Every structure is written in C-alpha cells, then in structure tokens.
Picture (cartoon, rainbow, N blue to C red):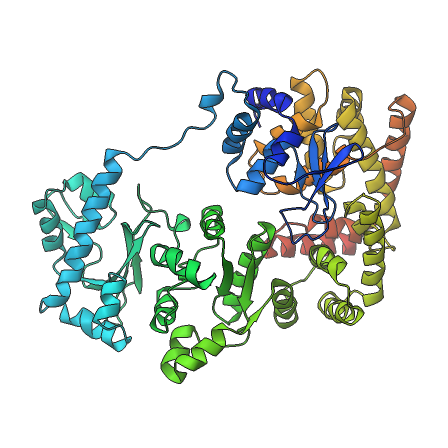
Length: 595
C-alpha cells in the first residue's frame, strides 16, 4: 500500500469536524463534546458523539465512526476522493493539488453518438413488429400477455433475423461502423461480414434514469440450444451494475406512491405495471451496488424488496436488506418465503387482487431476517452466529416490550444454538456499556464464550499494545521486533497500517491513519475504521515504557501457548471458502492423528 494521503491529511488538519458534521446535522453541546441523532441507523435518542478534541465522530449504538472525510463519505454515499473535495468546500480550504484528487466527468461527443445510434436501433426494433418477420415477436409477447400498449410503454421490440440488414440500416442512418461496434450490439465476422448480436430475438431496452436507451437484453423465442438471454456487454455507456431496469418510469411514479418495489426481472416489473404500479424496478440478476444505493436514496421513498420466494431469491434479498440497512435506507420486505411463484405467475393464475394482497404482505427487516435464518439455517460456525447476535444487538436494545424481547431471544436461540439467557446477559452488559458511553465494543463478544479464557486475556493484551502503538512509535518498533503479528485478525491488519504509517511520519496520528486505511483496497476497511475510532475514545492509564511493553509481550506469548488446537482451527477457518475450510479441517485431523 503506497502512502498517498499528504493532500488529504493537510485538508483534515484544517477541517473542524464540528463544522463539517454540523453542516448536515443539528448538534447539541454536551460537556466537551457534541451530540446528534445518528443518521446511520434508526436512532431516536441522540447517540452520535462528535469530539472537537479528538476530531472524530462515533455512534455508540451502531458503531459507525471516523473522521470528517468518513462522515461525508457515509452520509452522502460518495467516493472517498469526492468526500475530500466536499470537506474542502465546507471548510473553505483548497490546497494546491486538490483538483487532481477527483475531477467530474463531462458528457462527451462519443456518448452523444452512441445514444443517437441506440435510439435509432430501438426504433428499428419497434418498427419490426410491423414486418412479416416480426410476427414471431408479436406472438411471443402476446403469449406473455404483453399487448401493443405495454410493448410501446416499455419500448419492447424485435430484432429481425437478418442481422446484417439491421447494421446496414444504422450505417445508412449515418452512424459509423466504429460507433455501431461500440454500442455492443454488433458481431464482426470479417471486415465485410457483420451481424446484429440480437438477431431473431425479442428485445428489452435498458434505459438510464433519463430514459435514454443504453443497452439491451434480448430473449430467444424458440427453445433451442442458444442462450436464453443475450445481454449487451459492458460498453462505454452500459454498465449493468450501475442501472436499475425501469428506473426512468419508476422515478416519477414512486413520488406519488411513496414507495418503490425492487424486483428480480423484467416480467415482475411488467406484472406490477399491469395492475397500476409503475413504481417498480428490477436488479436484473445483480447484487445491489453503491450506484444502485445512490439512486434509491435519491428517490426518498420506502423501498419494498420483492425478489423470488425460493432460497436463492431469499438469500439475495437478505444480502440486499443488509446493504440497505447499513446505508440507513428505509425499507420493508414482501413476506414471500416459501412461495414458488413470482408476481407474473400470481397475476396470470389468480388475478389482480391476489397480486395486490401478495405485494402488501410486508414485514420489517428484522422479522424477515429471523424468518430467513430459521428457514434456511445458513450459519455454520460460531463466528457466523456471533456476527448475527452482534447485528441484532442494536435492535434488541430498542425493544421496550418484554414479550417482544423474549420472542426475539427465543428465535435467536433456535437459530444460533446459544442459550437465550446468555444472549440476554450479553444484552444487559451491552446496555450498560452504551449507557456508560463506551458503545458496543468487540471485547464484549470476546467474553461471550467464557470457556475461552485464554483468548480473552490474549486479545486484551493485544488491544493494550495496539493502543500504545497508536500513540507511540517506540511501541510500533517493539511490535515489529518482538511480536510480528497479532492473533486477532483485525488487530493484525491495524498493526500493519500502523507500521506503514510510522515509516512515513514522525508521530502517530489516528486521523492520518484512518486516511491511510481509506485509501487501501481492503473489503473490511469500515470495520477497521470503527475499531480505530473506538480506540480514539479510549483511555488507557498505563505508561508506555519498557516495563509495560515487556509485560505485554510475556502475556501475549504465554496466552498464545495456552490456546487449544480447536481455537487455532476455528480462527484459521475465518473468511475461507467451503473448499478451503474442508482442506484445513482435513489437515487438522491428520495432524491430530499423528500426534
């Protein structure tokens, strides 16, 4: 990881986090800090703390925290470079070189040429319905109950079987062979032989949010050996993970409805459109991306997830629900677990009222998640089960009804196999920690398995050394020379960043360290930043001297030697694929037999 944060660190030193966060939220002074309602979870009592002294923000319920850049990045859902520029604008400080960090992309002539070409191509596909060849397309759409008005509404079409004639049409319209090729619809066989990749198929144009055609999904009509769908490849205009099908129609319709349905595919969107619900989009088989999140957030309406009721569909919906919850987006889920029918099938078989009833059977994220885990039982390791408990702690903390709390605890007990009273005790200790202003710490979860005493002492010692490293370069040098690596995965990653930071700076600084983490390409950078932010709010009374460091070394080495083989095995399985886990377990058993 090359260090590239000099400009951003300079801006950070000139950025008062109170001014930055205060430009987005109402702040209330409380002692030496400020408090605000946290925008990153469903907060009712102000749980976000902003420290002018430390220049950090931290929510002591959901755990989100960081510096001024992190706040803007998470609140506005922009890239880290864009967050740097926005902070610079807020505080009015623009050092030389800032422009090079991130520049807005301008619409160019190439884009305009591609849009015009695709516009003409889609008109050609729509006109093809009127030709003898196009009757097959009409018959297919009629069989799916998509009449002429619906075909026109969604700009559906048919790509004639003579794919060369289609390309010749575009050439006659004045589009260059290079432009046609860059749309992604042309297949070059030779310099003089070219064809339309969609030939002989019905076409579903994919539009951007402004209604411009940017790509196609083309479906075969007959059941042959060809691919069921032929999709436009990644092009200058078309990026599948950046677009939601039907967003150009749904963006206005959802304002009237107050909600938008997120569905699986085209036919789901059409089914909802037939009963008067135009506020529907389809993810087209992709995961929900940051670009999707930004689009959905900008709509400012309730999101209603409506993917297939089978296990793959529910698994995908669970992943999307996590992303929406993490980003603080308001949503509910269509409770269709166990249903094998999609909206189109329900409408065709049972009619409009049945589909409306189906779509209005909504549950919140928490109920959906518990039902999903109860049905699918996907959690295999203790770490996965503990992660679920951690995920639900903020939910449990907000429950005031004892009956409701008991219901949740019983479900969590059944899902994880953890005793409900153990979870209740963890909840009690977590509530005490939150009330004391300490938040939901990782250390609470180290104590969740009291039989693993050696690990508790080891991780506590590693945490102490890590804190000292954040304050003192001498402790970083000691770590490099004497320790070399922590048992805890997150601590080990943080230590690596600290070593790199120490090589480039005279003093340790947590704010600058977070910038270094943000500029990395790690998938778990948010978790690392949450830990670093928690560290900024900690107070460790121990003086960092040779005696303390040697005592920590003795504890770490001693406790490592006491860790059981089973503990080592469980830690080595973290984050590994099922194939890798099987190999590790087989090797573990082989060594045990040879002992």
